[in-house]
Length: 413
Image (tube, rainbow, N blue to C red; front, side):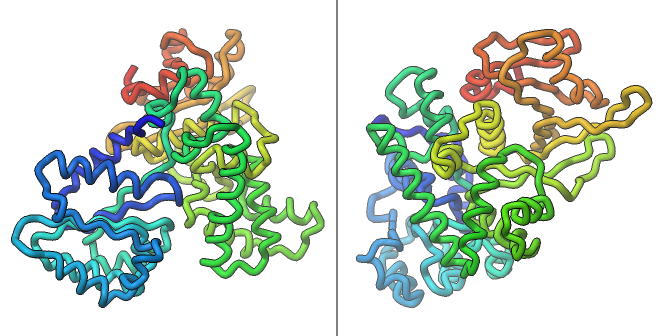
């Protein structure tokens, strides 16, 4: 397997180097957090003159390092390795396994020649209590499964072949090392059941595993569809599970969000400039996990494409909402939807996802919500087809999916 390029995250680490804060690398299990720190970041440090014995790496989920789960032992060991006044780089993998790790890390911040990097697999390790303990001294770097551009960088084949694989098996790095479709399928299914769901059940003491299973199935089947706990409750009732409360559904959704397994996109009233609290959309952080959960049965390319576009926008650092635009037809007010409203500082883009625009009528259908937004921010339709970027008669930009995913400046075209 070729080396996986994760240049965007490496740049984030470089920009935060020796900034006096604890660099906290978070993300779903098996998304490549450890690989990012070692070898990618470690190799960068070595290439730039850092001595090997000034990089201290401890994998806290390895049995041989169990003694360091005691915070006092970990603290004493790290301090014993500091022999001079040069900068030391501390990399602690799966730090949440250490009891009272907050006090250990905060203590390290008082040592001027320590630069600290930690990983954790769930956002509970960044709960409000822990943020209070850090008191502004933590700097989070969220790592996602491989974006398509990263996947292509390590894929042994054409871009078209890479897409055919990516849209089915997703971007967890180890998928690239599995040789057959059977191996890839088994890896993703086992990971979903034995790691992600087991983690959630154990961490949150889930009592109704049957409800959690059913909820995951419903969310997997309806990516990109508007829903809320009440709507989900009605679905449970229709399937003869009448004893499932809305509070339970809400709690379990929050547990899935907390694990980074799914992401939530809220609705935003573009004209009214306010959020609409319900319903919302849910997307999977890795499309391969979603497909594996459904036994690779529902491979509708339009929904998969929409999920992948959402993940790409998050990867690029945008805040992403679902846009709601009110239009008037025959004196009747209707709400139409813009797939994504993307914000980053003073930048904003409105994006529609469409498999193709085969006719003028289809083009107008996709354009209609965008044309009813009265501002000057760029409006874009991303289509599955391989096309040269072009502009519609109404001034809407149209770009092909591969161009969008592989060109980091594609939104500027």
